[in-house]
Image 1 (cartoon, rainbow, N blue to C red):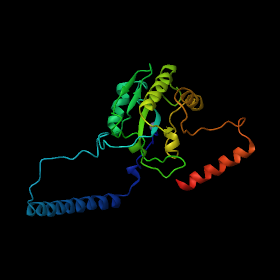
Image 2: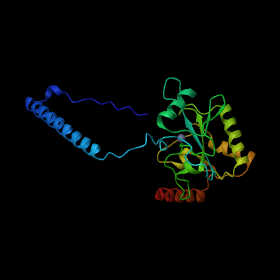
Image 3: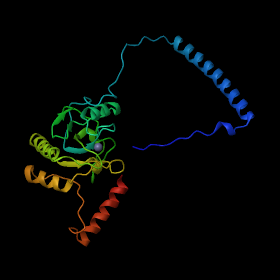
Image 4: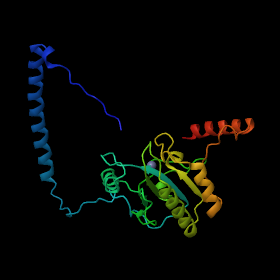
Length: 243
Ligand SMILES: [Zn+2]
């Protein structure tokens, strides 16, 4: 969150001519507004087309847009409530509602999993996104989103990590999931979540328990040979050019 302090310019320093000018402009704008509003009214009255008493809110809802979709990506996120209790589940859900977004699953601090959106439906959790190394975008359409409740300084609990592993393996037992991505992998310019999470260890455990899966992982300097390092730099440049 960013807070911007806005300070209004001091009115006391303005000269009287300034106030007369502003006052006249306000009157003029007011008269113009009345004129435009009456013109619009006249136009509306002349085209008396009957309309259904219906409001289309499909663009505002967070799921249910499509029932036939191919899912091959799991996206892991972090989220917290910006109010007093960062780990409040209700606070997080209210926040989702306010921003018109939702994950499929929300994992609470004690490891309890809340299913928020049916897997077959699209949930709005990924935003503007691209699958690394591919031209695939709009990944909400092809992914399942999982949110962990944790902050930028307090990572997921052991219980949350265990539940996430069980959930990822459960989804993989039912679906052909090829990619396990962090939100930061698919929206690197905008997102940094999941936060304070040992991604490499987690991916290793996923592979050990449910088989090979494509991930994006940073190699540590000790593990990286000079040659591999150069290769990664090239890849990174290509990704920049492609985004
Ligand atoms: Zn996220």
